[in-house]
Amino acid sequence: MTESRWDVAALRAGAGVCLLIAVPLTVIAAIVDSDDGGVQALFFFGAMAGFVVGGGCAAWVERRGTPISHSVVTTGGTYLATQAVFVVIRLIAGRDVNWFGVFFTLGLVLLAGVVGGLLGARLQASGFTPSTRSERP
Image 1 (cartoon, rainbow, N blue to C red):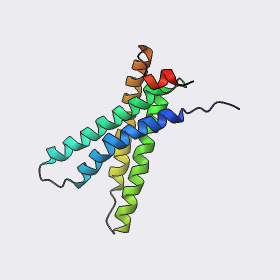
Image 2: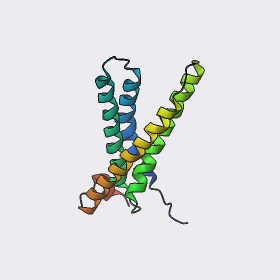
Image 3: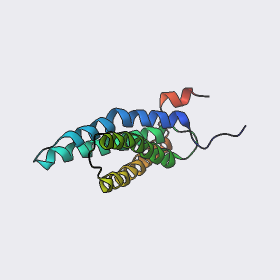
Image 4: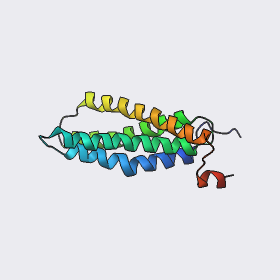
C-alpha cells in the first residue's frame, strides 16, 4: 500500500482552526452592516489572520514534507466548503450572490494559506514540533 500525498490529520487540524477562528469572523463581517467600514474591515482582517493560523497549523503538523501545499489546501478547502453553504442559503432565500466577492476573497484566502504555510515550514525547520506530531508513529 502506498502512502498518501496528504496528511489527513494535519488537514483536519488546520481546518478545525479555520472553522474555529476564521469562519465565525467571516460570518460576523458579512452580518455587520455598518456605515463605518472600519468595523467590517476589522472582522475581515481578523478572519484572514484566522486563515493564516489555520493554514499554519496544517503546515506545522504535516509529515509529508509539503507544508505549503497542506496549508493552501486547508485554507482553500475550508473557505470553499463554508462559502458553498453560505451561497446555497442566499440562493434559497432569494438573495443575490456577489460572485466577484466570493472569488476575490478566495484569492486572499489562498494567499493567507501561502503565508501560513511559510510560517509552518519555518516552525518545522527550526525543530519546534507539536507534541501530537512527536507522538504519532
